[in-house]
Length: 170
Image (cartoon, rainbow, N blue to C red; front, side, top):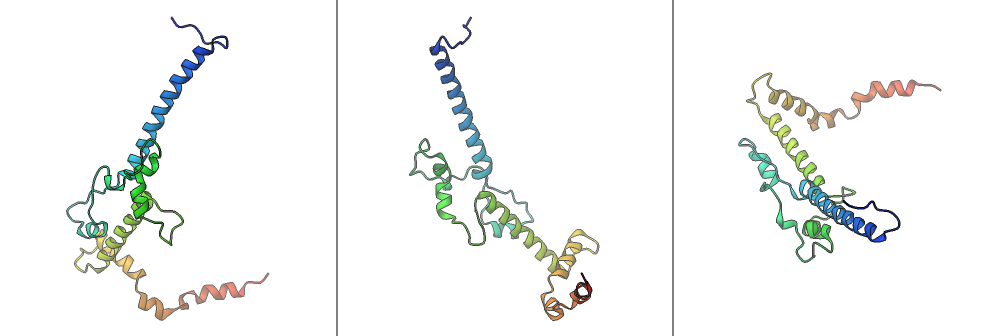
């Protein structure tokens, strides 16, 4: 039976706090590894058979921990963040169009590129079954991307709205 810890026995508190620090340390390491593993190190997308275009956009898709992003010149116990992603950070500077850049930014940009390619392919597919989702998204996307017609019309489609704004009085 253990004695209750009181202010009279400082060794009991030191022992208990030491155990808590060790547990906190282990939970902290597990949390960091889990976070980095889920968010930073696991960057692979499974491609199905019909997604050749997505594969060419993404390059080679991989699954699991990407060991090439590790900075092995840094000791993990001294600077785990640099160890875990130092090589990736060195090889992936922040693009000028972004305020920050990381693995999730890279993932979001890859998804945007893939979705854009799906839309482009659907808009060019003249063999799509009428009424199919591919035909619908292709037609919708193409209607917004007719740059020649948009340039020819200029601001004319806005004339009625601009006139309403011009007619407003205080």
